[in-house]
Length: 415
Image (tube, rainbow, N blue to C red; front, side):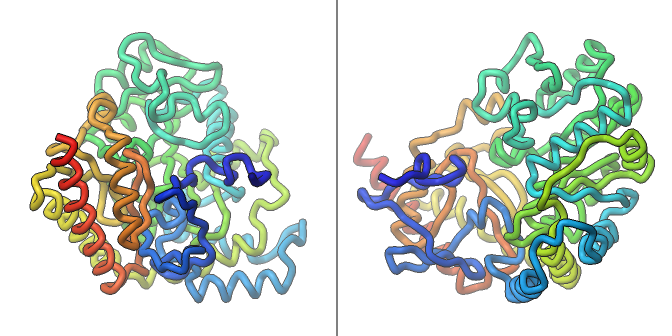
């Protein structure tokens, strides 16, 4: 028995044993993971969305290696940090000031602090079942918790209160019940509840009502930023947040997070001497990864990527339909989830009712037998990146068709 708790430092990354054997990854490259069992796996977990360029992108690795040779932790200001911030805000419109940190969880925590300082109010609202970081305050109401499924009394802690996703009336009730809301945190889709999509006009309604009551809008784009285009997904959807939190894709596998905001808000926080820190925040390795990633994404063909992902989603549905097992998907071509139901859920209540952990685990194991690695959870997501070329996608299609057949056969035997 090892000394790591459960063998890994993040519970979200735990994989089950297959036929009694635990898998360890020894290398990652492009769309592939290489296991200690000697096999190559096509990967659609992609470091839980940590890269849209693929694992170990050569240009990013070269830039980060150069930064490492020059020194990974000067401690004081270095020119690469400002260059990374400038490269980022070049693609985020009116959000033109940046504070870097080291993870998405830190970024959301900091954005909430900035909102409280800027508004003088105490509490932020987040979507029930949304994941906005694992730190105590913002972890409140995460997917599968008792609070996430509330129907009557609104769950709250001293710093956070919850909103029911896609419930227009609940937005109005929130502000009727509270006069201390500093900000509403939203995602372009409710990603960790398995890519629940916003109803037409819902996020626009959130924005309108929040603004009417003097609350700020924080777009949590740690997962969705730079996945629909080389910029913020919220802005591509026509939304106009006051701040956005970013991470994952902007670093292409290098640990980084950050808050991007309007100048007036960020300056207010600065003048108030709001607390921000982090020995490694904005370090040269992260800065190099951001600069290089921004350059690569600007030259990338997002419509083609979306089309490849949409085709894979259609193949999944068709493969299961061909063997008499109804499935549906939610999300976009670049990031999506699978539901073992003929119709995808539109709200968390429905999602909770149809989530099937046993079948999601069975799917993970059958795909893994066939050389494909996915998250083993009904709330897991599949990521298609620019590294997923035709060879990788063909491997995935073959694995999916085989897994569908195996699951249908098992279902028949069990019946």
